[in-house]
View (cartoon, helix red, strand yellow):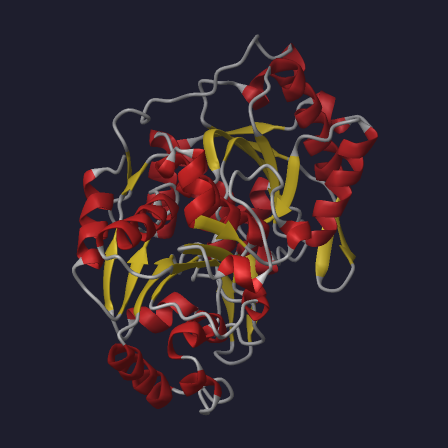
Length: 438
């Protein structure tokens, strides 16, 4: 069920205590590892219960799917596990039962929910074993929230929540150790960053990495060789590699793409960058859309649906673009293709990913679209094919913005991505006529 790396991590956590960090780059199976760890804790350590927490509902649902695969038996799934939180945001197909009823939750050994939904749980339930996923996007308070159910009133009655400075965090680590809590914090600082007012705010996993033991997975079972190479070099993972049995995996279709789309969808080319010159528009609050790219996403998705039933997801950095793409897909009668932001894409994967870059201006200001973490999430969701839509020259020569603190212009991480795709891992093509027409 687990590979050698994953098994090593599980055994390490089974024989150790306190708080520890597991860095899981894209596709290395950190959710699978966390799910197996929870099951082994229940079966071998005979602990009362384990709390599995993720920042997003999509990631929490992934925990449920992995638990279901490992347990296999419907009886074992329903007797051991329960999903709780916001019912409207939970995948209704999950084989794991859902409930917010305290009396039902306390009878289960594995409880799964999001960080934000923890407030629905009763503090009368104590968890001495906690697994926190997607801690790369979680803030410090997201790390503290699930620990309340182990330390309980000790945290809620002290200044930890209101003034979490380093001295208090060090004290918290000592307090956790004294209370016998085993907390495994899973995530990747290079996958996302916490949502906060300060650009330099540390993520939950970064807090733990500074103060606790850690381990790292390197073998990815999602990304074929070209994608794992791109992600490894772009995010500087220092050794991320494809598993042997999927390294040469390529997109398979029911039939060949039509000629106007052939260069875009070419199955033998894992990564294709379509060089587009659409115009950006500022919408909503601090968000952007690019109508030309949105229409192109719709057209590509529409043609892909004639070629395959494989999973497709469209990813973008901006909520405005997400809504625009959804509108085009709705007009085309397409309802089975997910459109999400990079934050929403955390913890998910798809056979085909279309990534809309959006930004294009004369000043070459890429802004937030050039964050390493957001770019890394977008390029690492795919299992077979990655299609990038955006102005290549803009990303190659773009700036993230002006730093008043350091008094200089910051180069955008999009530069490295453009260089790597063009020179080593993919192919940049001109916009075909089928995407230029309205």
